[in-house]
Image 1 (cartoon, rainbow, N blue to C red):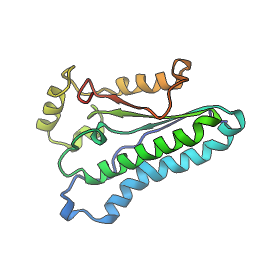
Image 2: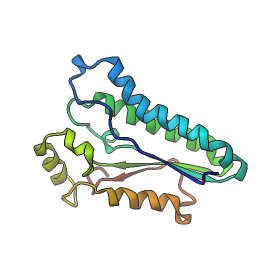
Image 3: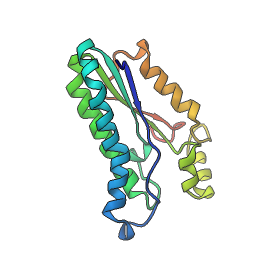
Image 4: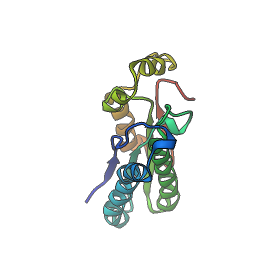
Length: 167
């Protein structure tokens, strides 16, 4: 059985103006973020319910905390829906001993950063108190914390891993 589920996905969309985006592109992004998280949660839930414990961690985005990059409508919409799923599951599953949280990086130094211009990446880094983008290790550390016993009284949280870009 599964004690911890961590769901993360890279964007399926190509940034484009709202007037040009198709619903199919939005649906692809929703399938990647929300539908996949939904299916993964349903797959592990029976075992977690039997044990009366478990931890589900979704990877969101600080773009749901503030203004997203220009032309990232599908991504921002799907991450906002993932945040709503996280909160809903935290309320429903908390009484059953299952914690559900979200880790929301700012623009990370991963493949997603390649989808935005270098100037935007530099600007994002300069807008953080720590003056850099999130690394994969930064995000992993927050996830590891939520998997640990030290976080057993945390559920429904959205932890920004963004160097202080949002507070």
